[in-house]
Image (tube, rainbow, N blue to C red; front, side, top):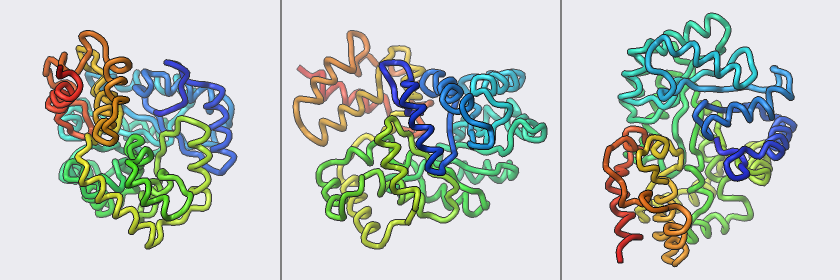
Length: 357
C-alpha cells in the first residue's frame, strides 16, 4: 500500500530492489488490494514480483473491497480482473476487506463469503479470511456466523491496544478464542509510531540505537498467534531497517516493554487525532479535501507549535474550495473511516486552528 513513489507513480526500480532484498532475506508475504495507490498497487506487484519470480517464491494476499461491486454477479468478474492485474492464477489468501457492521451486512447480502469459499474449492484461493475494523462484538458475530474464515487481519499496535475506539486487545482475544491466526495491520499506526514526539523518542533512545519502528513491530509480533505483521515500507531504507530486527526476531524484553508503557502514557496524554492515513475518507469526498493531510498538520501543530504546520496547511495541502471549512458535512468520510473518527467535527477544529483570521 505504501510503496515508494515518484510523484503519482510507483517507483518501479526501487520497488524491484525492495522485493529482491525482502526475498533474499527469507521473507515472502505480500499484501495488496485493488484500491491501493489508486489501482497501481496490483500492477506494480505484477511488474516487480510475479513476472520476475516463480509462484512458489512468494505468498500473495488480495482483498474483496466493497467499492468495486454492487451485487453478487459483480464479484467473480472483479476477482478475475484482480488475478489478471497481479499476473497470477490464484491468491494464497483472499480477504473480505474492511469488515464492520455495515460492510458485513452488504457482503452477506451479496453472498460474498459464499463466493469466496467457492473460489477456494475451485483452487483459485488457498485461504479465505477477513480484514476487520470495528468493535470486538462484531468480530465475534462474524466468526460465529462464518467459522470457515481461516485468518483475521486486525489493527494492532501499542497505542491502540487498549484504545476503546479500536479495541485491538479485545479483537485479538476474540481471534484467540476462535483459534484464528492473526495478521497485524498498522503496527506503526500509519507512521505515527515512527515519527514520535521528542519526549517519546527520548524514551526509546535511552535503550540504544534501535529504530522506533523496531519497538512497534516487535511489540505486535511478540503476541502468541500472530501469523504475520505487515509493514507498509515506502523506501529501501525502511526495508533494510525492518529486515535487521525481524530476520532474527526476538520479542520485547522486560525493559523494552516498560519503555513501551511509558510511550503509551505519553500518547494518552497528547490528545492527537488517531488517523492512519489510509485515505479511504478522501476517496469519496465530494469536495476533494485532503483529510489525512489536514489531520497530520493538525497533529504537527499540537506537537511542535511552530509556523511549519501553518505553511503546509495553506501552501501544500489545501487550495481554494478544498479547505477544512469547505466540508459540506455529507458524512461519506465517516462511513469509510476504519478508525471511526468524527471527521466532520475534527475538520471544524482544523478550520478553527488554521483558518481563523
